[in-house]
Length: 517
Image 1: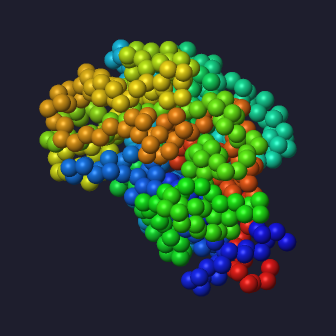
Image 2: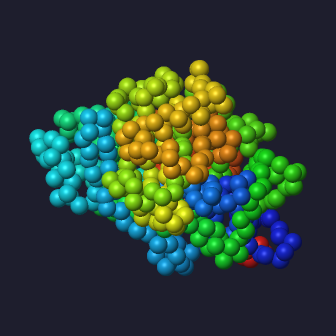
Image 3: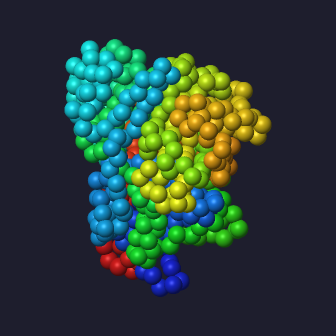
């Protein structure tokens, strides 16, 4: 029998359960801990930050709550299923509010497009911009449904670590033209360049170049239309906090402000972790919610890797990074009435700007901005009468040949962002700012240990997805599993929560130490 079958780790506290360690308290790591706790493991989650949630946590400044990462929930049923697995009711724990509209897109020519889950409203919006594209919209939704059923409900919710699993689905990939990019597919259905942008930009929310990422990702349009776009009151950080509560109710631990230095290897298996302070914690199962690149280059630095070597990771195409300006205002609740919960401000270029960011690694003078105003839905994110905002601009990651020096550039870029916001959405903004926090690519590198300061780990190109992505069950070390954005199925809230669902199908149910199997 193998070590994995017998669960030899002992616990001096008298807890007979086999032990699991989860490195990282991001949403993927917390979901993994919940599933392992439900399977009978004694789980310890370890994270270097002071709050659970990773990129989905929050900061507070002058009465403003800055939600740091994901801002919406698009597939609430995966949360309901996760909570139900742990004997909990998601709706009783988390207050989700549907958004209508989902977001508004604005272009430099003054035109706007309001996206919602109401098909008649969507058709009216398309007819207003480009009447000739109505038939293409109907076809695009059908295309999106086909890819959702295959890409999300099938491939996205099961492991793809066996090559044969990939070979079996290649005919379906070919039939759905997975080789075509998201933008190329949108261009086949829409003639108007604004609508081509409106139905192809979504890969940017998971770190992908719309002009290179597989068209499987048009499934997002079906997700929005079928399940809506929701906001969790209290921010995504409220979801993370409830996940911590459930883990602790299962007898698990969430150990914050603690650095994991490396993964322990004994008898050719993952055997626990060594902390930065020198302490070693043994376990039967190790799950890494750290970035896959960090896991293989840093946490396993004392073990020779076969597939995910430094050289291989250097050739990997990584997602872009982000400049995120969190800011708070006072006396503005009645100002800017046309700025809703989510607004996307397009720069003068779409394809050119994306090429600069992903391929050239060039920080352009122009920009596009995703503006989040949660106080439209959740006034508790700011002091009475105030607002809290999150302005996000995609920028090149730090791994390009001539990386941007953000120690010198961050404030200059923030000033440019403020100028764009004042011109296109928030006039006189500078008169009302009372709080400010900037996250540059350096922040993503240092705070989240993200390779090259990327915002979303490995870019989800077709040859970096499914079997080609770092597997949920490690190819490099038995007993090690991966969850989160850098593994299958990928980044974004649905992706990282689904990665924990895949994990739950790979890790065997726990057998208490000393119990017969």
